[in-house]
Length: 242
Image (cartoon, rainbow, N blue to C red; front, side, top):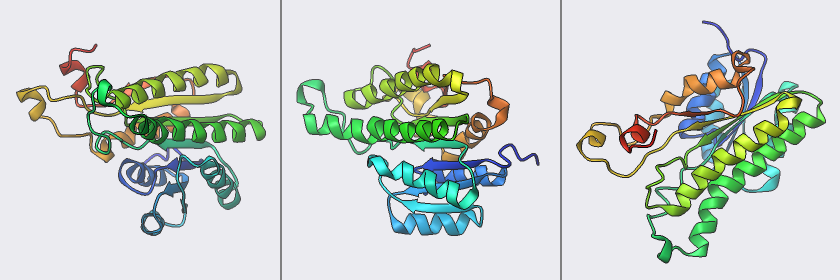
C-alpha cells in the first residue's frame, strides 16, 4: 500500500472521536504523524493508545485561541515538522434545535457560530501563522459539518455552513501565492425528503470521508485549493440544489 502521507505531520482538531478519529487512523495508516485534539482527557488517552507511536493527543477546546497553537508546537516538538491541519468542525445541528428566525435567541446564534465558525477561524489562523513563520507551504482541510440545504429550518446552522465555505475560499485565494492550500469537505444532511431520503443513512459514516481527506492532505492534491467536495449521500441533489 502506498503511503500517501509519508513524512507529513498533521494536527487534527476534533481528532479523538468520530470523523476526526477515523481520519487520524487513516492518516497514520498512510504514513503520517498526527497530533489529535479533543475535549476530554478520556478521549485523548484512548485515541493516543489506539493510534500508536506516531500519534500524540492533546486536550483542549477549539474555540480557545491558544489550543491550536499549542497543538502545532507539540507537533513540531515531537515530530520535527508541521505540514497540515484538518479541522473537524463540530456538528451543532443536534445540539441546536430548529428554531425559526423570529424565535432565535442571540445566545443560540452565538453558540452555533462559536462552535462551527469561530473555532475554525482560530485554528486556520494559527496554522497560517505557523506556515508563514516557518517560511513554508502547507495544507488546511476544513470539514463543514454545518453544511445543509438552504431550506433548512435551522437558520443559524445554515448560516454557519455557508460562512465556512466562504471563509475557506477567501483565505485559499489570499494564501495561494504562499503555497498554502485550503479546501473543504462538506458533509451533512437536509430536512426530511420523503421515502427516498428514508432509504439513505441518517448521516455520513466517519470512514466514508477518510479517502477524500487523505487525498486532499497529500501531495497528489498539490494544485487543488479553494475547492469544496460535497459528500452527503445525494441529499443536495434530492433537495433540488444543483
